[in-house]
Structure formats: structure tokens, C-alpha cells
Image 1 (cartoon, helix red, strand yellow):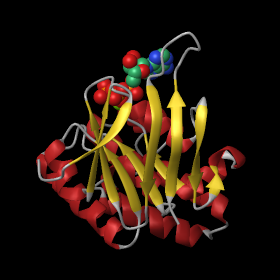
Image 2 (spheres, rainbow, N blue to C red; image 1 turned 45 degrees about the vertical axis):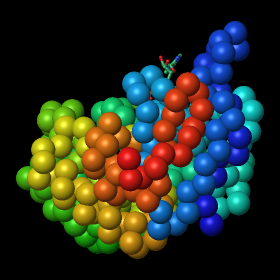
Image 3 (cartoon, protein in one colour; image 1 turned 180 degrees about the vertical axis):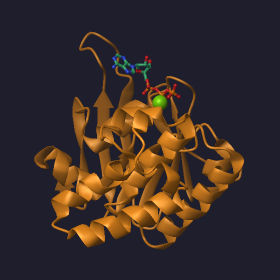
Length: 222
Ligand SMILES: Nc1ncnc2c1ncn2[C@@H]1O[C@H](COP(=O)(O)OP(=O)(O)OP(=O)(O)O)[C@@H](O)[C@H]1O
Ligand SMILES: [Mg+2]
């Protein structure tokens, strides 16, 4: 069981040099890997390759032994929860409550259970009072929490979170830290992309850094 990048190389244009070259990584259940790197180093690009939004020119990604290229987007969504760097991109429903409950409608759950799970996450992320609000009227931090709630609701085995602490105040950041720590203890695997190195280093057991298109391991103690 693992999410694996097998020697990925990628460039946006055929005439460009590779922006990511020969990238290999392996994420296991119960593990958190932090992915660090300067602005423009390719963190978001790598995350999109890992979730199948972009396709590598060389190499492939597998999740629990299955090649990602052979899975539908819905199939990938059951395995990997993805938080976009800009969470507004993944909000599309007419209310915050619906945004969380929507993915559950495809799982054959009865309306009572959908409502229960939705309420639990609305409450956990401090969004109870906003359940009927249009997502685009929420603040940046509220939208970030809503997008997180909407990917947590399906309880996938792996998560890729691109800058999950953006827009969160220190209290919310700390709550998220403990929530993610609990997910890891419960066997979920997380790739955490963050400019908040302190947050990332506290949570992750392995630190990876992208530099000049290559991925390297970093000593967690540094
Ligand atoms: N859609 C695109 N088309 C062409 N080039 C792109 C595209 N998206 C990103 N790039 C380029 O690819 C490189 C890597 O960008 P990427 O967004 O993956 O970096 P990042 O590490 O996530 O940066 P940040 O820390 O600012 O989020 C950059 O040079 C960027 O300009
Ligand atoms: Mg990015």
C-alpha cells in the first residue's frame, strides 16, 4: 500500500527544459512527507502530477499498486484527497453545507448519514453558522477550512495538501495541526506542501525539497 512517483519528468511545453526531472517518492499509510521548495520550484506541478491533473512525459504514478493513468478522476478521488493551493478553485456548490455533503451523495449513503457527517465537519471546522452561506462570500480562511472539510468527508487513504495553512489564524492552524496528526495516527498518508516550515517539520516524518527540478531529502533536524 503506497502512493508512488516512479521517475517522473515533466515540462509544460515540449520546447522547454524539464521543470521536474526524474522525481521519485513513496508515501506510505501513516506517514507524512513535507514537500518544501522556493516559489516556482515545482511543488504544485508535482502535486498535480501525483493526482493526475497533469500527465508526466516520462515515468508514472501508482496508488496502491494501480497505475494512476488507468483510473478515472472519481476513482482517484476515492484514493487521494487533494487540496488546491487556491481553495476557491474547488468550491462549486451553492452553500457551505452542500459543498461538504455533495461527494457523499455518490457513495450511496442515506440522507441521515450524509447530514450527520456534514454537521460533524461543519462543527469541527467552525463553519456551523455558515452552512447556508454561498461559499464565495466566505473569507479566505473560511474557504480554506471549507475546502479541507470537503476533502476530509470521503476519508480517503491519502491526502495531498497544497499550502493548507494559508489564511488560517494561529488558533485554526493549531487545530488543523492536531487534526492532521490524528489522521496520520489513524493510518492516512499525507503529502504536505507548505511555506510554513515550522508547521511542516512538526508534522512530517520525512522532508523533501525541490530544487532546480530535482527532489532531494532534507535532514529533518536542520
Ligand atoms: N500552467 C502553467 N504553464 C506553464 N508554466 C507553468 C504553469 N504553471 C506553473 N508553471 C511554471 O512551472 C514552474 C513551477 O511552478 P509551480 O507552481 O509548480 O511552483 P511552486 O513550487 O508550487 O510555487 P509556489 O511556491 O509559488 O506555489 C514555475 O516556473 C511556473 O512559472
Ligand atoms: Mg505552488
